[in-house]
Image 1 (cartoon, rainbow, N blue to C red):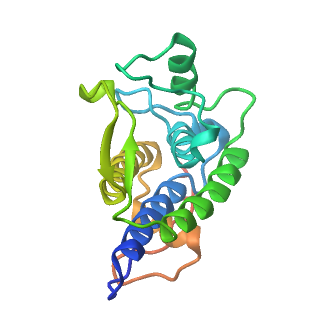
Image 2 (cartoon, rainbow, N blue to C red; image 1 turned 180 degrees about the vertical axis):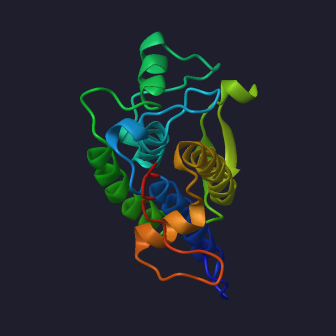
Length: 196
């Protein structure tokens, strides 16, 4: 949790982003490779896929293969590359995906801390929202939108994980970060299988 404090605006953005990334990472705590690939809801999302996709999103812009051109055009190859970010392939492991996520998490939070929320920037087209051309916006717009998207994915991960084994976000965060129990939750630990 982003502990209440008197911070400047950019520190608040960085802390909220880090909080969402912490929750996403914790959603994989204790999962096997098979469990990380499960899609127990009606969507095609898995915990491993959500972490891989989030890692893609938080990478430096130059690392991104999928591009949207002015007019909302997305090439077939760019679309395929983007869709590949939502699932772990057979040659990818959860541990490798988390290691990449962890490196990128540190980098993106540090980048946010060094950003000016008032700086003007160009936001690329988003044809899925009907925005076919680039727009100008202050950095705070993008940071707020980024937190919104991370929270959405963290919510997806919460639901998927609860469907897999009933684990909840708070107990997973406690276990994943090594924090002690609270009056409301114990750190997650694997349940012993029921015996007959």
